[in-house]
Image 1 (tube, rainbow, N blue to C red):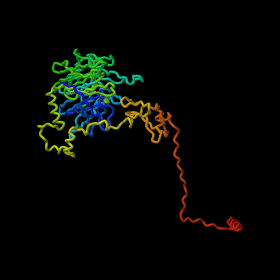
Image 2: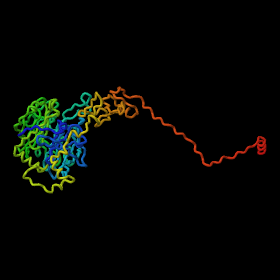
Image 3: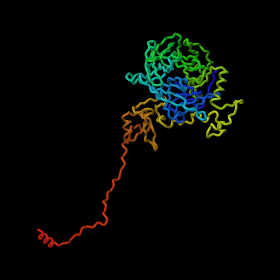
Image 4: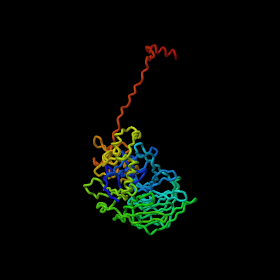
Length: 533
């Protein structure tokens, strides 16, 4: 058991409370970065590498046939072990976007391929559900059950915004517990059904879920209605019969008060370690627990925690995730210390023994990277596997540092783009922004200020523009001055461009003959007039 501090290398700003850590093909992935994905990593998924007390991130790419996966906080994440010829994968449902929108989509994340340089490529597909579909939510769980040769997914808990008919201006962003319904759906056809059980009378979120065969155990959780964390433990049994499924629930009296905890496996069997979480709003849970699932049911036993540092003990919040069997990555805030440039301290917690750690380190070295073992056999033909790269480049880049994420490579969005500080009283925060106008979707509406030679862009919300005036200015040809440059909502009409009318000159016919004229005296005219009369 070890607790070691970890130094993030140009990546501390990407980790935030609510992020998820996945493990695919032996690689640890970070999902749910802070803010929207940027140019250096448009997928928003990073590979985590912990080595020599440092943490580095590497951008992970998606296949061409993948769908877009937004960065989601507090989604329901469920690992699917390989079965029936299907590969190892993850289910991701719900969660909150950087705009504080709550998602109701279901995604399936699998490994697509490994490149010649061992780079991981993922495939993301959105799964559509039909029938009684679960609504948008976060802080819930998704589990896998197997019964009578069938496999299904169990979704329970979470919280969401108030119904549209009950939301007011004061309670627009207020969240409530979702109804205590159990949703059952299959991945092959996407058929979903909702079930109500009398034992599940109150909604709960940020609980833990453990599944084995046809049973799912729900442990702990927080209830907004009572603002409490009751020591609850439920056993949900699902029988996937030929007609309709049969669900039954049993209340167990060995639960603990816990929410927002982290779990990790400790082996191929159903053994887990529970770390972190909260007992109350102002008290963290410093104890650890061991969870064992077997034929008899679930067993909860206290587990010796590591020797916590003073920063961890005195911190008010913490978060993290599992980075392997028996390993955690913890983050605690720096509590506003001006000497620290990063927002959080990071720690690597490992419950493995020294023999297990050496075995895992050797395994990862063989499958993920070239090692410097003295007794290792050199691969003479390894250059043929790396097209377009020289052998000396492979030796220098064994750590993959050329692919490591660096914050300095990102474009500073505080100076350019939609998230600039447009004025002295700018109120747009990219982490808390919500649509203000009906025309806004993912970015704030902006309007151009004509002051100065080049002018500049400002947020319409910061300029206190009404939606009618904003539409009028965007459709017309009126110039606008921002509040810092006069505060005029708009100036006079831009004078129309003067267009000189075309002068139409009649065309002259070439070689045109004029009719002959006869000159006669008045006497002759009088004679001819009398002659023809």
